[in-house]
Length: 104
Image (cartoon, rainbow, N blue to C red; front, side, top):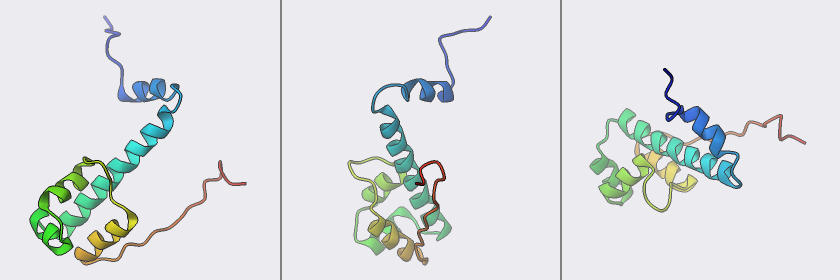
């Protein structure tokens, strides 16, 4: 017997995207989560603790935790991402790939 009370996340996302303004909110949340993953992966690759990275940046370890979990009111700006990467021994490089669907 199939229980219809449960849906996959994919199905839920599709349903939510039909609600006015929800697609933009979902895309924003995905971007925030990707930035959070990037901060954590960069710190871990540099073998730095949250406290050590916080010290290098002049912020609290709690702020690093917020950045890595996507919590807090503000996500990282590009300038902050660059500082994080530099504190971890790297250089932030950005690139743009044109989306053929949106190209004019």
